[in-house]
Length: 218
Image (cartoon, rainbow, N blue to C red; front, side, top):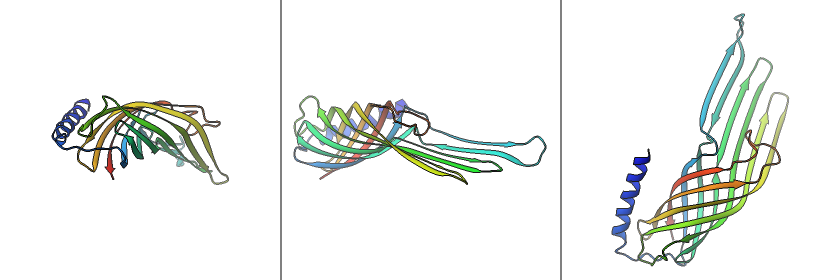
C-alpha cells in the first residue's frame, strides 16, 4: 500500500512539473474540495454473532455490528488571502458505528457518528511564486467536534448530542494540476477534550489521520 502511495505522489509531482510552465496564481481565489482517507484513532470492522440455546429451541441472541471508524471524509472551503496563506473551513465525517442486537424479548439499535467542524489556515513553505505547482504546507485548525448517538429499543427511544472543543495540526502538499484543479495529500493529528457522555463507546476521538483530496479552484 505504501508503494502505491509513493507511485501516485511521483506521478503527481511529474504532472506538477509540466504544469510549472504556466503561472497559476492563487492569491484572491477560492476552492471547494472533497477529501477521503483513514483515521487511526479507531479501527474499521464488521461483526455478526448468532447464538443458539443448548436445547435447540431456536435463536436466543443475535448481534450485528457495522463500523466505519477507520474512514474519514469531508468538504473543505479555502480562500487564499496571500500566495502563501489560505484560510479554510472544513466539515468532516470522522467516525460512525451501527449496532443491532436481537433477542427473544427485544430489539436494540444503536447508531453514532462524530463530525468535526473546524476553521484554520494553511501556510505554504518556501514562499511559493505564482508559477510554483508543487506547494508543501503546514496547517492548523480549531473548532467543535460534534458527536451524536441514538439508542432505540422496543420500549425505549433515546438520543443525545455531545459537543467538544478540539484542534488539528498537520502538514500536506498541494499539486496544482491546472488552473482549476488541485490534488492534495494531508496528514495530521486530532486532539479534543472529552465528551460529557460517551459517543460510540468513546470519550474522545484523538488520533492521527491521512487523506487525499481534490479541489476545484474558482
